Image (tube, rainbow, N blue to C red; front, side, top):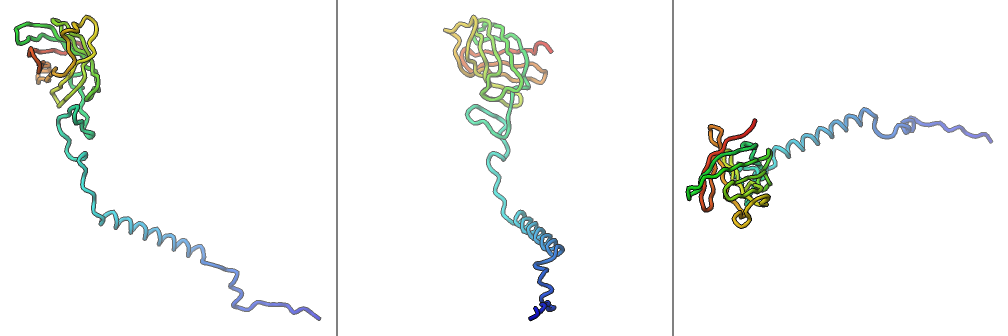
Amino acid sequence: MAKKKYTRGPEEENDDRKGLSKEAWVTIGTIAAALITGVVTLIVHLYPKAPPSAAVQTPSPTLNAASPSPVSIVTADAIAGHWSGQAKDSSGKSFQITLDVRKSCSINEQCGSISVSHVPCYGEVFLDRATVDEFDFRVDNFYGQSDRKVCQPGGGEHFRLRPDGSLMYSTSYEPRAEGLLQRQGG
């Protein structure tokens, strides 16, 4: 008995090509990408925006240790350097004062040192509060020949940069003192 040879019919000849052509898949991918891009664009433009947070709103021009602003950082750069001058307290006593402030010093940081000749007090200064031209420091960590019975840690050393480049000094504790310091060196 002879074997009968099997031949395919016209319907079966297309069975070798299963699925879509490469060109069809490229077209489908392009259309899908365009749809995704369109949906994302619509969501971005039509979805209500969140209200701005308090941290992004206009920062306070003054910073202090109790409420530093995370948006705006005020430093003591305007008065960085070595300052020296004469001051007088409310009892009439004159004395020499020097102030050294390092660059990039910000709120609550140790910024340098201060010395007051007549007490004497030699200590480190820490920035408590600052604006563009006014700086409040507290003094702590007295060293050297400081009279530790008289030198007390705390705030109250106020400096205001004047238009002529000098530095006005005042205290907020008794005995009140005022003076004028000049920048020393370059």
